[in-house]
Amino acid sequence: MRTGRASALTDTGRRRPHNEDTFVCDPPLFAVADGVGGAKAGEIASRLAAATLEERLPGSFGEDTLTALILEANNRIYRHALDDPDAAGMGTVVTALLVDETACTVAIGHVGDSRAYRIRDEGLEQLTPDHSLVGELVRAGRLSTEEAEQHPHRSVITRAVGTEPTVDVHTEVLDALPGDLYLICSDGLTDLVRDEHILELIAAAEDDPEAAVQSLVDAANSAGGIDNITVVLFEILAGDPVPAPAPEPTAPDPDDDTAEHALEPGENAASASATPLSTPPIQRHGAGAGGRWLALLAILLAISIAAIVIWWSLKR
Image (cartoon, rainbow, N blue to C red):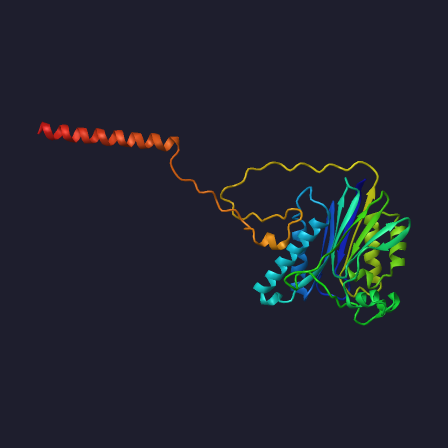
């Protein structure tokens, strides 16, 4: 199998002055980050999370990779909030999907109430749990799904990236099949557009990701657009995996001390934070071949001058 067409769209909506959502649509990695904590802080948090996810090392897949990246994002956002009083309490919701074409799997890393869905055999399945107050009540059997949709506190989340020193990341790996469509979206869509209507709009777009994401955003805005709306949609096709382009080898610059530390698969944020984020410049001591010749010429010149001085003194 291989990843096919993909499309993403984010919109401020009709009520919010700023867009605090950020997305990643960079096959094989797809994600939505919905910032919390105010316009400035929420936007910073979601962008930090997206930027961290994009540091994934080529060839790294699976739950451990997504866990390490989200924990590192948590670490960076939390430290930023400590350093900037204006950003105190900021955080972000993160839902990320990572496709492994060789293993025919899709890994999920998830914190918060954005959602991932799979469309298979003309049915829509929610893949991620809502880490929200009403989500917890639904799972406990104290609220029905219909009651949760109308609950006044349905936007209260119970888990976010960056608000605490660490975070519990929900992960799982699912088998992927040709013909699957995967949707990641912020609650700006799902709070206003019911699952059945989401499926109808995607089907009406004839499974074309670009047309579908536009239809979904338009539907949320038509229903009031009370929040930022972000949608990412991609398809899985039959066929051989597309080989990733080989990175061009580059020689390290000994004077470059700004390189970020990239997370290895399975490495967590705690171990990463203990690793220096930059490499000290290489210190070189001693003379090379050219330096030795210059030193020898200097010695010979000094001896010659001394001999001339002695000869001049004897002549006098």
